[in-house]
Length: 186
Image 1 (cartoon, rainbow, N blue to C red):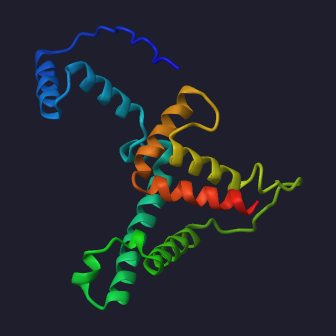
Image 2: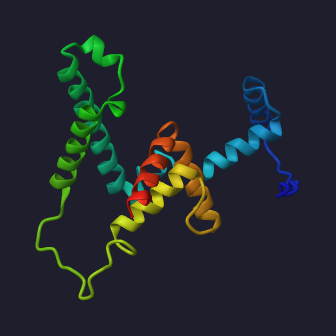
C-alpha cells in the first residue's frame, strides 16, 4: 500500500522558535520539517505531565506510587538473589523472574492500600470477563503495546497504540510472546 501524500501546512512562529527548531533539527541530523513533525506527534502522545493534573491526577499518583514501589522491590529482589548491590546494579529486575514477582507484589500492595472502602456492589447483569471485563481491556492494551496498531481505528486510538508501543520499547517482544502463548493455549 503506497504511503499517503504529505499535506503542506504553513504556520507562523517567532525568530527564536525558528532558531530553536533549526538547532534541534541539526542536532538530530534531520530537516526542520521532520523535527516539527516529530515534536507535534510527541505532543499528542500521552506523557506523565498530562496526567499529573486535572481528571487524571489520582491515576498519576497511583502510577507514581506503584512505579516507585516496583522499582525498590525489584531492586531489592535482585539484591536478595545476588547478595551484592554491585551485582544487583548490573541487572535489570524486569529481566529476572524472582525480582519481577517482587515488584508485582509491591504494586499489588499499593493498589490494595488505595482501594476505596465500603462494600463492593456488583452489576445486576454479571460481565463476561473474557469479552467486556477488565481482562479484555488489558488484552487490548497489551495488543496495542505489542504491535503499535489500534484495536479499532480512530485518530485517538491510533495515537494511543503508537504511544503504547513506543513506551513498551524492548518489552513489546515479550508482550507479543505472551499474547501468542495465551492464544496457543485456547
